Amino acid sequence: MKKKLVFATNNAHKLEEIRAILGDKLEILSLNDINCHADIPETADTLEGNARLKAGYIYQNYGMDCFADDTGLEVEALGGAPGIYSARYAGGEGHDSEANMRKLLSEMEGKENRRARFRTAICLIENGKEHLFEGIVQGNIIEARRGTAGFGYDPVFQPEGYAETFAEMGNEEKNKISHRARAVQQLVEYLRSEN
Image (cartoon, rainbow, N blue to C red; front, side, top):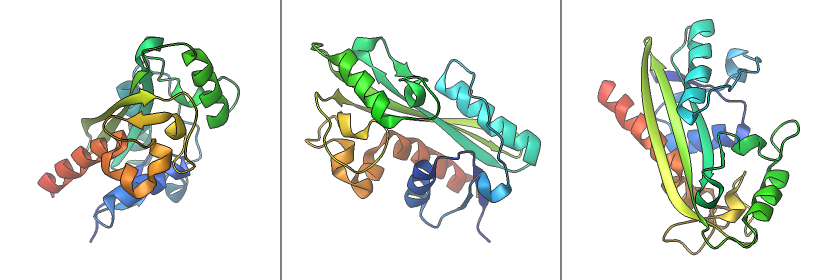
């Protein structure tokens, strides 16, 4: 029987990406699948802290093994911003990727240092024990968006060593090298060593 794990997210893109990365190794349940419709607060001041809050909420309220992630785009010239505010960088309600990208590009105008990194922190809670995993991909913020695949800041992020942005790569290629793929790989290796 396949191990069941709840992925504490309502983001359909993330869920799809994680399921694609994990293949059929585990059965990944969404918050919807367990009838969790709470807006779990992300009030920590680090990515790890937010991942912990979300995973902890599910474990405490549903008693199921679970993991949660938080991802941020950290731009050197902006002192690490947008960081934990990546999804709501432009303010307003919800996650407006277009507005976030416009704000980022406008704040990067005229800046020579375009170095940035995507960082994902994953918190797994299994049998009441907490485990943290991290994935990082270095790259640059380009001057104008390119590509239509992916989501979030993918059209303006060009990973180191590649000519394409994440949005030009297509999901299969991106899922091999992305920050989330790297963090998930560590999660999978840990779960394999356990089971």
